[in-house]
Image (cartoon, rainbow, N blue to C red; front, side, top):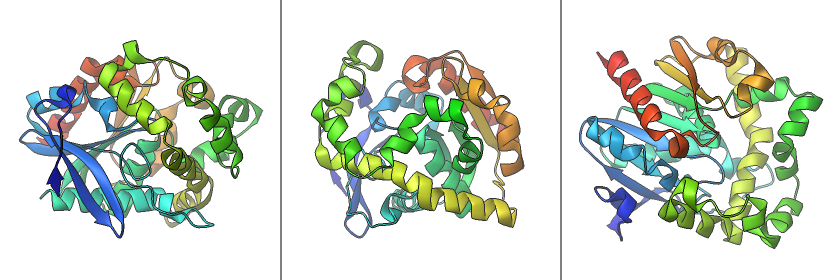
Length: 299
């Protein structure tokens, strides 16, 4: 591991690169002292999406680890395969497990948003001995979402199926990445977070890798979910499910806690008044809910 320049928004954090697999390095920020928690971002964000939440959790008494997932931000973009397995949530979860062990954390909490929630869920299922708590934000399991696919879901979440196509998504996004992802987001994201995200969406290798994440979602990730469900495997640690009122998750799926219930043994959760990017839009409430969950289930 080696230290590099620290961005001001993570002033009390150290930035490092950690080798987690053959040819794969993750860019990581970590800081604080106390019970460890790793925060996993979604698409097309980087770990800097947590820049308003991570310091609050440090102040509350946690060690906080924020990586760029493989294929995102400034982490490695390894070659893919026809089945997209290098970008499966199982591969990404294994990265996170190796990362946390290299940082000296054998047991830790995991929080994931959007695509990161699938990595967090897979980690809790694949390495239950390591995960003390799981929090998933704005998601239902991939297999559950695909089981419920109808015209309404396919219209609203068309990008899942477009991103799974070969080549054309890369061409469409890279023709004008800023326009594709909705223009200038400086005010909502914060200048440094926006600059970090913008660097990622303008890098062809990163764009391709982020799309591989979606291609894996419809292949090995769905298969892994279905295998766990058929075997009756469940998440055995305390699980918190939060969703944003400004997103369409509840509109599309109704009672999202009921969807998560068969996957868990200890579930709680509820809505947060926010748009989809909760960590950027409602950081104080999110940090408070996470700390309350972690503290209560640790007591």
